[in-house]
Image (cartoon, rainbow, N blue to C red; front, side):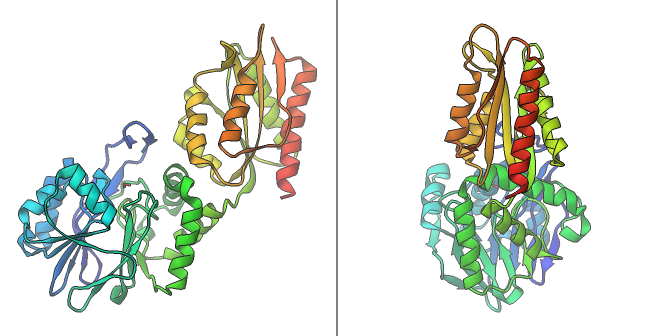
Length: 397
Ligand code: FEO
C-alpha cells in the first residue's frame, strides 16, 4: 500500500496482506486477505501508532521513510500487543532507540515478555493525554476489546479515533477508505470480524460505546488497524457494533448438520422447509464442507440455530464439534436453538449437541427430533414442524 494522508498531519504507513487465508493460526478464515494499518502523526513531535506483522517489516519501514526519517520518531504508541500489530516493533525501535513506547501497563508487561523490549515506556490509562505540538493524543483503555492490554488513541483536533482492532475488518483493498469500497462486502467482513473476535465481549463493547458517548468525543474518522478507514460514515460501524453487541437479530435461522448416510440431511432439509413455510429465511450449512467462521458470521444477526448430527460412537459426528467448541467460547448473544439427529442402533448425538448449545448460552426452545435408521414421513413432518414453530416464535420476538 502506498502511504497516504488520513487527515492532515496523520499518514497511513501500513501494509496490505493480500495472501493471508487464515489468521490467528488456523482459527479464522480470511478469504479476502487483510491489512495491518499503521499511522504516523507528524507534528512538533512525531508519533507512530501501532506497527505491522513482522514479515512486512521492510515494506512498513519503507512506507514510514516516505513520511519521515524514523530517527525523528519521539513516541511509538502500542494500542495492542498482538503480533499482527507489534511484530515490527523491535525493528522499528532499533531505528529510533530514543523513542518512548506509550501503552497500557498490561501492554508493557506483554512487550517485555514477547520481545524483552527494554525500551523507555510511558504507561497510560484512560484520561491521560500527550501533546505533540498542535495535536494531542488522548488514550482510552479498552480492556478485552479484545485483549486485556488493548486501548484506543484519539486525536481531538482531527476528530480521529485510532481504535486498533475494534471496528476493523479482515479485508485487503487497494482503496483504503470506506467510500472507495463496496460497503456490502466491507460490512460483511466487519460482521464476521465482530462475530469471531469480539463476540464474547459484547457486554464490554456496549459499555465502551456508552463510555465514548459520555465522553462526548467528536468522531469524524475511525482508522482501525485492519481494513478500511471509516471517513464517509463512521456512524455506520458504531451503530452496527451497538446492534451486534446488544444481540439484535433478525428472524432468520441457521441450520447446521452433517450426515453419514443421508438420514440427518433429509431431516435438515425438512427443518429448512418448515422455516420457509413461515416466510423465515433459513441458511443450511453442511459442516464438513462449510467454513466455520462463515457460519459464525451468518449467526451474528440470526435469531435461531438448529443443529443436526448423525450418531457415531454414541456421540455427534466429529465434524460438528469444532463449531460447537467455538460457540461455547464465543457465547453468541440472544439465540434460541434446537437439535435433531439420526442414529442406528444407539443414539447420543442429539444429547451431545444439546449439551454444547447449553454451554454456549443458546436457549433450547423445542424438544429434539430423533430418527432411528431412516426418517419416515412422520419424523420428517416433525422436523418440518420444528422449523415452522421456531420460525413462528422468532417472528413474534
Ligand atoms: Fe489485530 Fe488482536 O490483533
